[in-house]
Length: 268
Image (cartoon, rainbow, N blue to C red; front, side):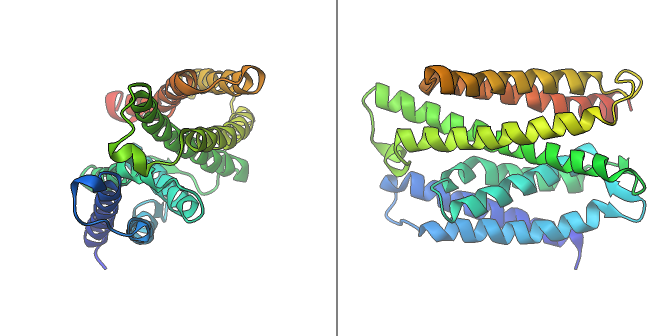
């Protein structure tokens, strides 16, 4: 089947899933309240179709093509897959109102702007593990950033004593914070493993054009480490946790995709 057609179907599933989740969040303005499973099912359908697209665009005879837009599409796939699987047992599907449309955008960019940065199939297995773990860590922190955004909106409405609207569709504030720190903890562990495995293959960060990525990744690791320590030692929560989470994510995003933009788009 044509890759473009599959990608369009996947993007349509993502957008429809995000729309249904949005209807549930803002359901008090509409007469129709779609079932919770509807958004999850559409998200999983999008993931299945997205998998077919990635198998044709990333896996090539010359190795893995991890150009900037392919990598963004792969990261979006990991994020939505983790979100939809988690939503089966935890109330996290509301993150899909942001993440599902972003995954659709990533698919469109992958098709509209084909990129090429081959990952040699003869490379060491440890380097492949490093790449996969790093993407998983980035994906979890992306989910945590969106969770922090929803938490900020929820906290603001509660402080202003406006608990109505879509805030009623969200889990309690304490549950939202617990889910946030679960994502951050797992993401921090994966980021730690990714950094350690990356140092094994780091010879000259300047010659390998990895100085920007390495330094910013370490800064992000430090930010999230301080946040987890503050949570354990001082019980950080609320706005403090939100600020540290978003700050760490911005630095990590610059580390990964910022370096790709410079190397693959600007310098190229």
